[in-house]
Amino acid sequence: MELRGKPTAAGRAKAARTTPPDPVLERPIPPQPPKPPPTPRARFLRRLGRTLLAALVTAAVVVPVSAAARPRIPAPAPAALAPPTTATLDKAYTANRANAAEASRMAAAHGDRTRAAADHAMAAPSRHFLTFDGRGQGLAVEVLGDLAHADRVAVLVPGSDTTLETYGRFRAGAAALQDHLDSLDHRHGAHGAHRTHGAHGSTSRPHTAVVAWLGYETPGTVSTTVLTTGRAEDAAPPLKRFIRELRGVVGEKAHVSLLCHSYGTVVCGRAARGLDVDDIALVGSPGSGADSVSALRTPARIWAARGADDWIVNVPHVHADLFGTTVGFGADPVSPAFGARVFAAGTGGHSDYFKPGSVSLDNLARIVLGDTSEVTRA
Image 1 (cartoon, helix red, strand yellow):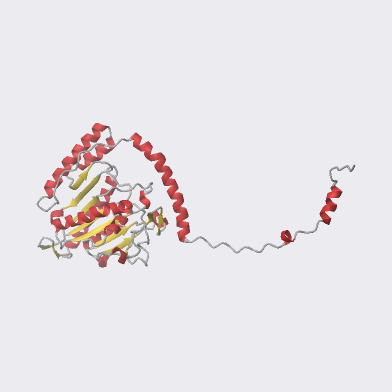
Image 2 (cartoon, one colour):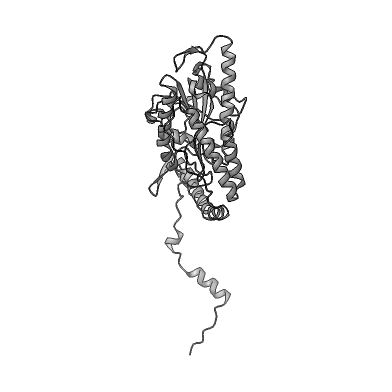
């Protein structure tokens, strides 16, 4: 009978010396070629995936809590009005102020002081609204200046997170533009410049008006909707309809400019085809939803600008189809390949394009007045 015990250290060493080498294990491993760097599209999709996940988590957590904390605010239905004319502007202004006052009372009774205060401010006798709707996020189309006699009109289209509660910031930009237009009119009028045949048949200095068009439900900055064209596609028909109605007030000879900011540039890109405006300016744009000026299919002059400190520069200017939805907004409007007239916007950030005294505000005013030779290029 053979007794077997544990092998000694010497025995293990002898076995290791006598075991033949395995040719597969001994074969040298060939060097692996370096992986190519990810393409811009791949980097965008990876970043997009993280953004979507964060947005979805935020929507799942924040939105239900916000909805629970703040129930839907009651408000009256909008005033039933026919498309405005020069003869009915005052009637529209009066009806919408009354609607805003009623919305303020209803919001106050509901316990929402913030919305009540916003609505109350819009009901002031000095305010002129073509549209007011206090329901939901709210819609408002306000006129600054004398629209009945205007032959130079700017229509401002805002970006994300613009609601009745935040409307004051949007209006401040419109007011700054109107003030600057007035100052340029008076300055040039003293030298006899800018004399033109007005939209209503008289030869004089241009009369200007600015329209703050919050005519769509803007997406939230932290949301999945801000990554897609869905809200812009919904907004395009009412914007096109408004421009047609505006022409009914100011006439076909008036110079109309569409000034679009941030996500508002996506709205303007969707509405641009065949739109009866003279100029479209895209500022702080994540992309217009088109790859070139020609793809917008509009006879209007297309302008674009981006401030040196605008964070929008970090947004990838590509688009991709994910789960049947187009995400992203295409080419950068300030890139040479897009083909826009790129103008200087100074050192401002994303919210500074209509800041008083800024380079961008001065250039936007020049565009509105038709002084294209005075616009400083980037």
